[in-house]
Length: 228
Ligand code: IPE
Ligand code: IPE
Ligand code: MG
Image 1 (cartoon, protein in one colour):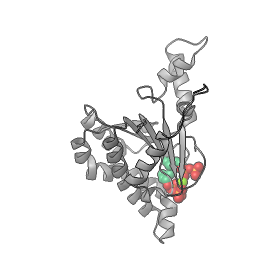
Image 2: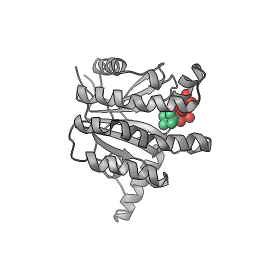
Image 3: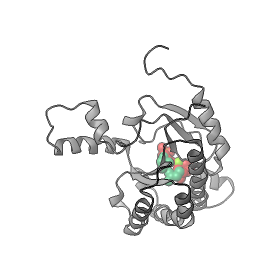
Image 4: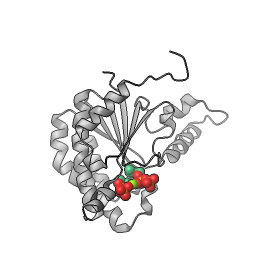
């Protein structure tokens, strides 16, 4: 099987999953957070190098304060439960997005996890938090300007200054819950990404389904504009 080096997932449908069983949206987020562990372990087992998970977009600030507050409390819940296991499995935690807008408690919890796992060399598990694809490109351009090159820039300049500069391009992007859109996730990074949309809500998306997605990816022909 041809294992993708970098998989990105838009973890969507927590709210609809909860609604289906007459539970509050927060319950969907809670179970969805537990599911991050399952998919990260599966990705690690399969030899995926980078798994980038869309956890909170720059547009998600439009949601009710109560829901935002709950979402911001989840990193602590997740790392309390699973950091030990992630360490044992040699998984490294990183983030993309502007963390500075998050509550200080949330930032501290995340920084601790990053610091603790920084020498692990299995899967790199990247949480996209307060992340927007357009913002990412603008941030990269600003970085280039700051470094003095303002007359003309190349594609490579953007690639070298964007948040994912240390990762390979995204090979496969999965979106759960049957919405067929990118919702401002990685934009620069998906020029030749393969897409899989599934009707499964994120809390129900399990390791077997992840494996199936990898198998489907593995059977696709990527031409990158050329001929085979
Ligand atoms: C994804 O689930 C989690 C976040 C966006 C934080 P949603 O909360 O978007 O769930 P739906 O799309 O309303 O079902
Ligand atoms: C995308 O889901 C963001 C995350 C999964 C974090 P949304 O639920 O915010 O996307 P839209 O609003 O349906 O496009
Ligand atoms: Mg949604």
